[in-house]
Length: 157
Image 1: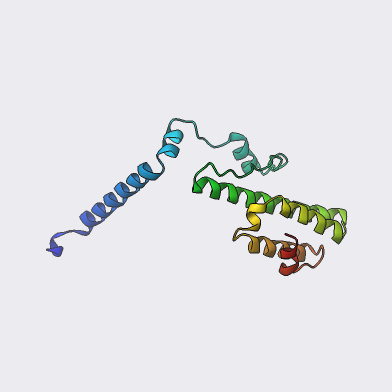
Image 2: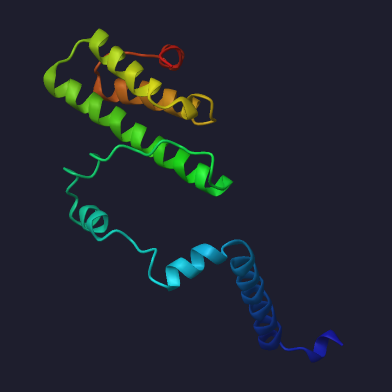
């Protein structure tokens, strides 16, 4: 029986089954997002796209991240957390870059880092905390600002 089915018809059947499965999942779980996208309500920001393409980041990080609200779905909360983590990483990198240029003292940098980290209590309790600590230690070592270990970075929270 299996010898009567060609590879082309088998692959076509599998592709159609996969396509129908993803259409089903999209309609069942992402109906609102898909409808907003197809109606044109949800689009990519032209300004942000231009900034990414041209590399100009002068106004890219000026906007403060929104505080997480618990009215949304789990996906919305995860998106907010990821956005907060990205914004915190960019602030930390910017701080360390500026501290190299301005020869800022270690105490002032640690105070500023402590201030940045206290602005994000959701990240403090998330799995990203250890990665942020590792990033701080690596960036300080690469920029030769001062030496800070991951444990010291963890105490800044």
